[in-house]
Image: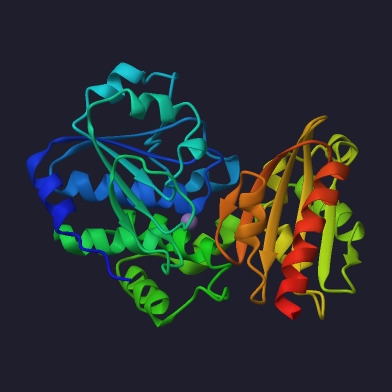
Length: 331
Ligand SMILES: [Mn+2]
């Protein structure tokens, strides 16, 4: 799947002001892609602002040392966004993932561009620059830099490295290809410091986060004849450890490490009637199909759902659909 970058070249050549946004509860690929794009546009003399519906989680803010990521309603208004020529959406193609930015973008006559690697999505009425085989939007942004003739500076290389590293579980997911390593080599040559980035990301855990991780590991249960691993974080777990929802990030991948397990789910309570479910697969079990059944989305091997119901209800509903998937696979 190759993206034709010519339409983006034209749009950038013809316009001066850009608003960049991404999905809520941003991860490194979201903000890394936004920052890479913003800085690339600025190299070209363009004006840009990153405006998200919510602030990025604390542990990834080191990627934004200049504080370029702004939050809608906090010093930047819908009118400011409407004044821009182009709205650039990175790392999602779904209205439902844009939070309050969705309405801001919808109401605007600005040209809309999406750069993304997710299969799930809506018709955003945008120029779609999409490669669902790409392991990270960050690598697509590197392609965009090349297409726009922007030399990658250390400030661009660092967030793009973090984007690709985290979306591939530090270069180990099945989505990794030689193109991943080629891009990474370029970013290192351009000034990204892998060891420092790793340390900033993973050696800054709070005690709360580690304690919650311990509780989830301890909750591990196997189902469907040992083919499914289930981990749970209850409201009590959050209250007693003082951890927050973003502290569950990446834990589901550890659940998947149990021998013989084909898929893993992490079920985390958000409140009495909302539950976050993260799904992972390491076989042909397509967890995106499961997530989409409940209004979620993602990739075949990594997907997520915000489930309207308790932890118990989420588990029952999702395990039932996963059971269908697993038996379909066996059949
Ligand atoms: Mn991504």
